[in-house]
Figure (cartoon, rainbow, N blue to C red):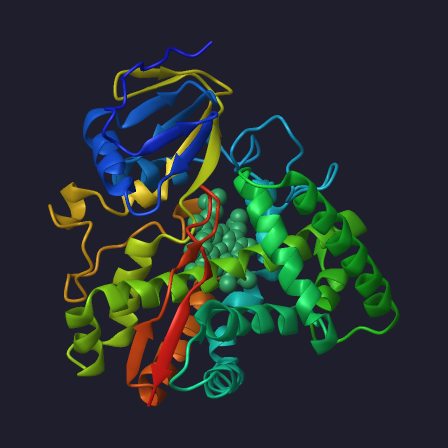
Length: 406
Ligand code: HEM
């Protein structure tokens, strides 16, 4: 039993307790985040029985103490159902604690260093230019489908050695599995996709075993942990993690980032005129977008925080979306886009032990895409209703009709 903080959420605030779902109403969550940070920085959400941490400094320090706040205990919203990222006894690195975590992460980390990622810039630019040039000029089209989606998907697919003709499946799997992780949507579709993706990678693994290539699957087949090779389950989970983590996240960064710029034309003008550097602007955009709103940890022991008694085993939501708007760090206008704001590290890519492995990749993909967009299309306009992804976990956009012209 937890010692619960029964601080009521004001009715006007926007955390909708819809059938026990911790759902963030698109566009109205800022007030709820503010309330959490100020009034209940460690808040017990009774319908789903977990804590919510919302201040930047708390989330940073918790992320640096995996001995107290474990990932092994589960990183997605507790639901009592099977965790979609791990299979059986093989967890993903994102669900491991040290020292196992460090050993497994080091197997792939070399492929994601800023230097290795920089080698991919020319290929990224090729894909970005192709997608921009391939979309209509002057008439509405779906920005997500044509511009935000192809680059991250192709890059991770090519890193894994997935051929061109599997691209459509690759996209469908990634979408279904991410939604599944959000625990808000159709679980059946999600679980079917998980099965298909494992079947696909199992076959790819057998092919690479017979004929290794210059891809991540071949590298994982050759890798050893504590003097032994990874087993099939471990490699499959690695592939699944990269597929899911590297795809919809960056897509969301780009599509929500574009929407944010269009809602703030003066800020977009700062970019166009060169008054702010694109990499700095992208950090401010990434802070506000927070593509992944939260991950979970489990307390490994009883611990008191902000006067609340968290018990060993209690799940805790690290609510990055609230932490990234912390007024004690970014000031009273933290909810606003300000590309000239001094840079302060945010937690959109996590922090500490599990800091995003693909951070350099995602940042470079976004920079390349925005550079090419700014250079090639001077007029950007949203031309219809934006459809948001129905998930509390990912702050995604499903469809965004846009008109771009020269
Ligand atoms: C803007 C895009 C991205 C966002 C917002 C994002 C966000 C995150 C966050 C918040 C974490 C921390 C998880 C935790 O602490 O439990 C994380 C971890 C991770 N990310 Fe990303 N990510 C992005 C892009 C990518 C890309 C492109 C890849 C690679 C293909 C990737 C691979 C990973 C992996 C493997 C982990 C687990 C690291 C570990 O457990 O040590 N991510 N990401």
